[in-house]
Image (tube, one colour):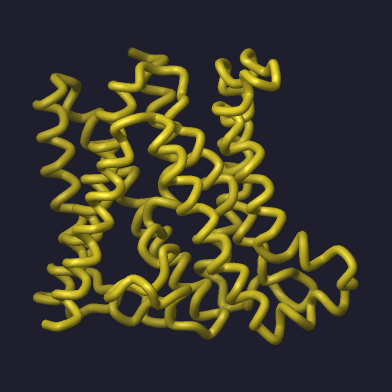
Length: 294
């Protein structure tokens, strides 16, 4: 009960910060940028304490690998490309920003490499063996964070983006909450015990039922095709749950409980944003397709 109260209070503050940030594109970008830095710093802090990762750095030489294989280079990437829509015009790069060329490229690269995350999830091997850095998942996390930071400057009306983003956040929070409470109350069959012992199949059913209801309500509210709204919501639901499992697998492989301990009931910010980080590129793609089709 105490844990539930802590989770609820933390969630309320988290929701208020996210929704308040959406008031203006710059404020949302700044909040997402700061969040990205924290997420990457949490990951890097864990990597720098991981014996196997340190051994990997020694094998490949410490002159350059700490910059490449921890959080420093990802933070540099997010700072340059995530903030490009804001600083681009001052660098005489308006065409690149307006056309979203870089973000489209990041989405394509993310989709190409995403199957490796799925293989990582279902594989029993540790980060694909002795010669592979344990930091490689941070590459896809960085791409997603770049998209998240730069998303307020999508080439669409910002009021539309606000609506899309609020719907997306409510869906993600609903998926997480429904899965948590249904799993807590009715959960018996484990979804993937070797990766996340607390997640249950009944919790997934709760998330899917919420998603179906949400998708139908979304179609009625926006007067769009019900099948399209429900299908889009289910896609987000699927990748949200998969993302949650992927992050759990990363933590299990790194032998940690959480990436931080400063959010009561949740751990670190990466533990709180995992569903968003691993599902946002697909949401971004859905927006692009929907805008172009409509």
